Length: 148
Image (cartoon, rainbow, N blue to C red; front, top):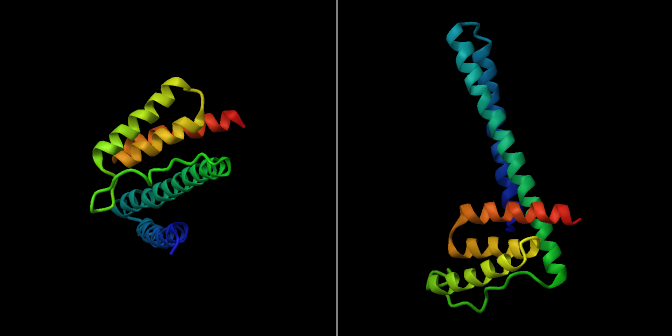
């Protein structure tokens, strides 16, 4: 099953859960008691927050996918297929670090280019630093939007 189909399936399941949770919140609000109303209001915040997280996550994913397709069309997608791998399939740590340093040097040489920021984000991901990968990919998306 494609990753996008899995994401759609999980999003649909989450939305069903959020609707059921909102239904419970409204049931609590309808009790008319102070505690019921307070709990209902608190529980109602969870589906609202959940929908916001889903929208932000999908928006980010679609933006990153757009950049990926652009790089693919240009023949410039990062390629780590030649890097040595552990038995688990992950890229060897030393090789990932060396590849990361090359990407960081590219960014230092051309900080206004979204393509090098994308490759740096990919290098962070290969190195296992997901938080910095997300932050760096946000920078790539911002630069690409300004580039259009």
